[in-house]
Image 1 (cartoon, chains in turn brown, orange):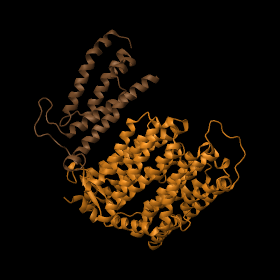
Image 2: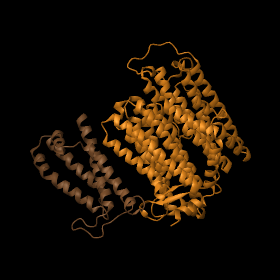
Image 3: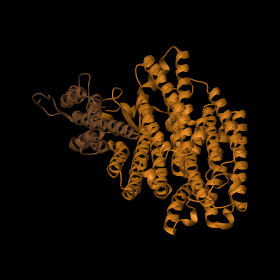
Image 4: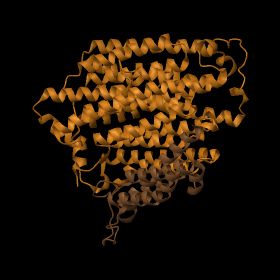
Length: 137
Length: 501
């Protein structure tokens, strides 16, 4: 789609939407949000970029194939699940928390890493699907 | 160390992730899959051994106490099923190295296969009904991918039927869960077992039980919800059909047995209607198998027939009959998986799956014919092969409880199985190969080099050895089934294990 307005807007919207997706991700532990929705917002950012600048440019900007994010995200989530088993022998997926909150982000625990894993998997899956469909269309 | 319950699940997840990293490397994927299946099998055997020695163990996921968290419970039934699933996975992943072409592997065949094994193990080990639903979803999603990989027209057609009916089953399952939760306020099976008998509104509980049966019935392929099964199972490659035919329908039966002994136990309900459904399943499966002209479809209908054996046997409701059902299920998992692998090799040898254009196996491939005879005759139940022994307990159970119509259906089903297998034997093995021009662009069995041939035959040999073990050392399996039946009927230990701190 060739549109100057969309092209200009997408340059500003891409970083904004990505920041927003991270915000949604961090907010998700106690409030609405989380890795899944955050991941969708982030992939929308890239889809918008692809609409405005063409698929090739977005692919070039991403550098890696989005499908590669799937195993990375899955292993991050799995490690977050296994960590408590290795650290203090508690069952799979037990929440581990650092004692003190970190400014801006708040409390950090294994649940956050699980959510980041979900975030990456969702970006990987949705971008792979959308890119594949728009390529074959 | 109860953490061992989670190891089969975590390990399959790791294998699957490693395979995803190796997306483009077909050769490495095949190696990793075989090694992963072998290690997974040994982990599950260790778990089985621990449960066999020390009894039921449980673990609370995320350290949330039952009934608030999700409990994984490894009783003898669950771990036996996990071991059987891993045995089939071992055979299938070996067979897939040659039975699945590289283009399919590039679409993620192996990672999804291991995810499905993870889903199956999870469904067997979970002690929470909603978690059971989640594992069902994991399995369904994986099975959609496995069914459609390759994207042939017939495959998509089968997949659409499979998809529609299984999604419907999922929705029904979810409705049943919602009703159950609304009535009891819990979904932990152990807690449900203590709450359900105290609920005064018996009518409502019976309806919930019926909805659960409907949901699991679609997955198991019982009458009249089996139509998707023969439509979907003959389309994918033999390795996939083997995984589906051996394990997926049995998962439905597993869920029926688990829920209807734990949550809605005998004594609270009459099982007459389950018996009638089982009998009708036997009849439709047996008659369907008899008229089919495609070997894979014949085997698909035989699955339905033998699911009927399990459902009808389960409806008798005594410990003796339950022992027979369990033994039959264990035998059936191994034999059915093996039969689909056999059908894959037969397809490679003769170039067809139509009974009319197959033949000459006995003449040209005598050794293989003898090997293939083992699963076929195990299925019929010729003593001392594995299909014979569970029928003693099944028939005995039906006679003791005086369920004559179940007995009649079981005998009819056995005779029909014999007839169908005889028909397959005549058409495929002893009849000479009909003269026809060989297909172009098709890799016949004789075009494979010897090591590739061995890879296609070894999984069949492996499963044949397991089913021979079931037949020749039947007292081991009988003892195992009796212990499981006892655990299922006297479920006090299960409940105590879940709530032990």
